[in-house]
Every structure is written in C-alpha cells, then in structure tokens.
Image 1: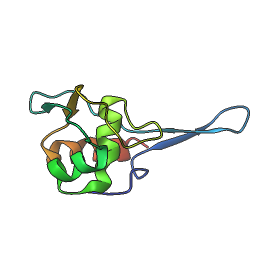
Image 2: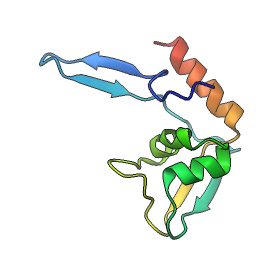
Image 3: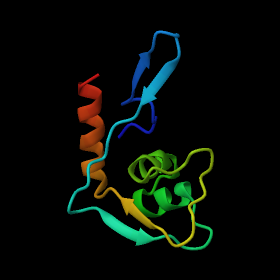
Image 4: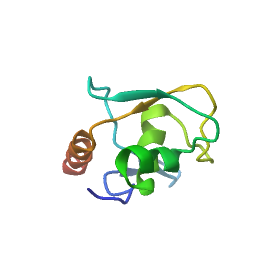
Amino acid sequence: MSVNRYSATKVHKNKDCYKTTQYPKFPKLPTDLYIISRDQDRLDLLANEFYKDPRLWWILAKANNLGKGSLDVPLGIQIRIPFPISDVNQSLRSAEDNK
C-alpha cells in the first residue's frame, strides 16, 4: 500500500489559483471496527495499533473527520477504524484509478 497520503488525492485549482486537495473516501463497511477513544489517544498511535504503521494516521483522520491541525483524539468519542487494511488498500487503488 502506498504510504504517501497524497498518492490517491486529486488536486483542483479554482478560479483564484488556489489548490484544493481531495482525499479518497472510505465508505462504511460491515467489517469496520469501532472503538471509544481513550485518554491520550492520537491518530498516529491508533494507526500503529490497528494498521501496524503510524504513517497511516490520515486514513483515520479522513474516516472520522479529525486531525485538523492535531493528531490528538478527543476523549470518549467513537472512532471508526476502516478495516481490514486490504479494503482500505482497495479504496486507495480505486481512487488512484479515477484520477
């Protein structure tokens, strides 16, 4: 799987020459895992726990609308873990194919 979070993104320019990055979507699947965040959870630590790779934190951020400026996760919220990683890989490949 590509670790680079920009590999499956689309970049669009608007009329003012600003660039917008659109990350791939991770639709909800019956195989997804759900957890309640614990004290001191962070997106990179959760990615390491569930995907064995902390660089995949951005997948959790995108799936849960988190990570805007911080890797910290608020205590006590439900977090969706797109799972298994093979399904996440398929979502990324599909997004790359549709570029």
